[in-house]
Amino acid sequence: LYGNNVLKSGMNRMTEGAGSHQGAVVYNMNDLPLGFGVTAKGTAECRRADLTSIVVLHQADLGEYIRNEAMLT
Image (cartoon, rainbow, N blue to C red; front, side):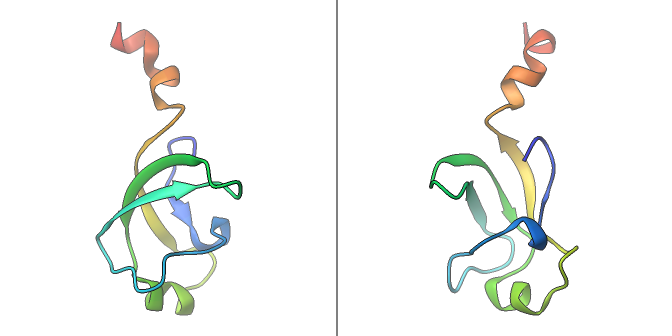
């Protein structure tokens, strides 16, 4: 994630029946959580969207604290 929104081209799968504007946890292919955000599109919309469409709006990710540690202390 590295502080970026998730594009459809970067997604492998999505929960069936997920709606738009719902909280979402983003996992890697090994089912390790990477971060969380809000869905920009529901499952049905994602299927029809082009590869450059944003599907998850970034809120936080695992590396965020480390990248901003100097500003937080």
